[in-house]
Amino acid sequence: MRALHSSMISRDPASLAQSPDAIKTELDFPGSLHAKFTNKLNIVDPSLINPLDIYRVVGVDGNQLDTSFDIDVDKPLAQKMYKDMVTISILDTIMFDAQRQGRLSFYMVNAGEEASAVGSASALKPEDNIFFQYREAGALLHRGFTLKEMMSQLYANKDDYGKGRNMPVHYASKKLNIHPISSPLATQLPHAAGAAYALKMRGQDAIVICYFGEGAASEGDFHAALNIAATRSCPMVFFCRNNGYAISTPSLEQYKGDGIASRGVGYGIDTIRVDGNDIFAVRRATQQARELALKDQKPVLIEAMSYRIAHHSTSDDSFAYRSKREVEDWKRKDNPITRMRKWLEIKGWWSEEAETELRASTRKEVLKAFSSAEKVKKPKIKNIFDDTYEELPEKLKAQRKELAEILDTYPDHYDLSHFENGREGLEEDK
Ligand SMILES: Cc1ncc(C[n+]2csc(CCOP(=O)(O)OP(=O)(O)O)c2C)c(N)n1
Ligand SMILES: [Mg+2]
Image (tube, rainbow, N blue to C red; front, side, top):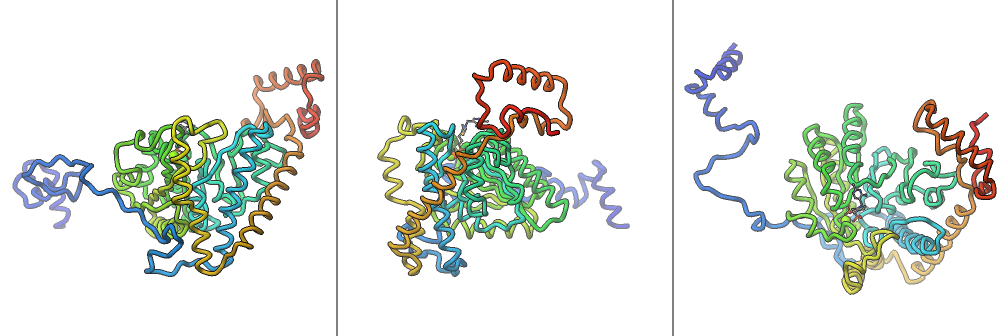
C-alpha cells in the first residue's frame, strides 16, 4: 500500500516539489543515473585522459611478463598454434604471387596479424558463431577450415560452398559456424549483434565473435551494433584489429580519440586493449571476454593493437603511402611469429630442425592444395541464377534464355569446358 502511495506521489508534479522522493528524482536524471552535481565548470579535455593500457603476457624476447598465471597451452596446442601462424604466412606468399601471375583475381594478406587471428580463435568453442571482416584467415585455419576448402573458395571451383559467386577471401562454413564474409565494411557488425541476440533468446550456451578493422569502426553500422548489443545485452565479443591503416589512411587520420577501445567504454561495454602481436595475451583476453559475455549475457570489446605488414590487398601498393623502412622496422622490432617461436624455444619445445621441417612440409601442403584446386572445374553455370529466389522470376528466366541463345550462337567465343557439365550446366537439373 505504501509503495503504491509513493509511486502515486512521484507522478503528481505538485507533490513532487515537497516530497523527499522529489529530491532523489531530481538528482537522478534518467539519461545518466549516477552522475554527481558540481559547482565547478569543467570541460573534459580528452588529451588529458591517459590512453587505455595494452595488456601483454609475453614480451618481444619470448619471456613471460604476466607471471600471475600459468599459460594454459600444452605442447601439442602450442605447436598447432605456431603451425597455423606459419601456414598462414606461407599461404599468403604463395597466393600473393599466384595473383601476380594471373592465376587468381584477388587475395588479401594477413602478415603482421597472425597472432590476433590464431590467439582469439584458440579461445572459442565450436558452438560459437563467427563473423569475420576478411583479414582473419589464421582463425579460419585454427578452427579447422582446411587448405582445400580455402583454395576451393579462392579458385571459385565447384567445391566452393558459395558456388563460385563470391569474391576471393569471402570464406564461409556452416559446419564451423562461420558466417559468410562480405566486403562492404562493417555490415557484419549489426548482423553479429542480431545473431548474438538470437542465441540469447534461444538460451544457447554460445557467444558470437565479430572481427573488424579500426577503419570499419568509422562506419555508422559499427555504432549501431555496439549500441544495440549494449542495450539489449547481447552475448558477444567485438574484436577490433587495430592495424594502423585503413588502406592508405593511417589510424590517426581516421579518428581523434583513444583508438577504438575508448568507444567501447563510451557505449557502456566492458573493454580490453591487448597487444595483438602477443598470441597469449590475445588468447587470455578472448577467453575472459567470452566468459563474461556468456556468464553475464553482455557484449565485451577487445581492441588488438598490431601493425599491417602486408599491402592492403593484391590491388594495393602500400609503398605509395608509407615508407619501406617503416614496414621493415616493424618486421624487425616485433613479429608475432618470431615472438611465439622465442617462447617455444625457451620452453624447449622448438628447434632449428623443427622450424626447417615445418616450413618445408607446410609449403608442400599449400602448393599441393593450390595446384589441386586450380584443376577442379568451375561450378555449373546455372548457379548464376540460383539460390536468390525460390522460384526464378520471369525477368531472370528471360535472361537465362538469352544467355543460352548467345552461348549456342557463339560457341567459339565461350569455352565452357572448364565449367562442370559445360554448356549443359546451364540447364535445370532434370
Ligand atoms: C562501405 C565500404 N566503404 C569502403 C570500402 C573500401 N575498403 C575496403 S577495405 C577498406 C579499409 C578497411 O580498413 P580496416 O577496417 O582498418 O581493415 P584492414 O584492411 O586494415 O584490415 C576500405 C576503405 C568498402 N569495402 N566498404
Ligand atoms: Mg585497419
